[in-house]
Image (tube, rainbow, N blue to C red; front, side, top):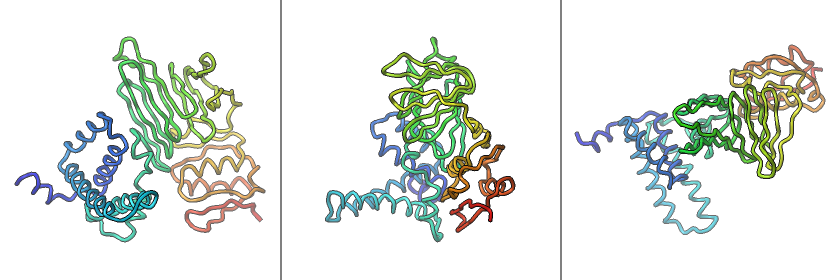
Length: 331
């Protein structure tokens, strides 16, 4: 049986189909990157199901593209059509390539396939997911919920770029390089250098928070000398300067162990933190937002976590739906 006939008889699993779609998205967004091409080729060669899913995704994508190219549209209208074609392709791919003919597959994909930024990143997590990765230099990464990171190692430096979310980094010794290459971590607000130990970076809209739990980290600035941050210190980096933060009311690295550890934290801030780990809406009324709580809370089940709050605070949970929860003052 030739390769074409063999591929016709294969039925790749939904997980393999998702991987094929993700590789196509990566290549579309990194067309000039030899590294991405090599990794995709290695993935295709690793198993016949991989190549089967890849070929069918290519075929489906080409068919959809040709159909939408034939439509009399231009400018913004054509862009909208092409976006629709991409979405349709992802939905149909799970149906046609995996035999997953079940109701609601579009919603299934919307929930399980990572957003565009996660698709093109070297390492990523979905909402509620936390994952660890070991790099070739001995560095270990932990990604928190809804995060995306790129890695770019060269002969002169090790560069990790935080595109979204939060990471915990245990610095590797880079024992294979003499001298060891600097370990740089970039984000949209600046650049830091891990000298030794362990640190957490959390990128938000207006600033990135750096918290050092072990060792030392340098904050590099284009307008001043590097700033050394020691274990136990936290800084806010906003692109112009770095400001020392007071002792936090939440352990910055506890999420790596699946925990939220609070010390006299505002309920409003606590709920905003919990919301990062679940889909839908969770919030609290203003008249209870200033209440304070301390404790250790497990992240593995946020519904169970929320159910603990009325046991220690004068609040009740109001579930409009499974995905819409509000904390209100207990009458």
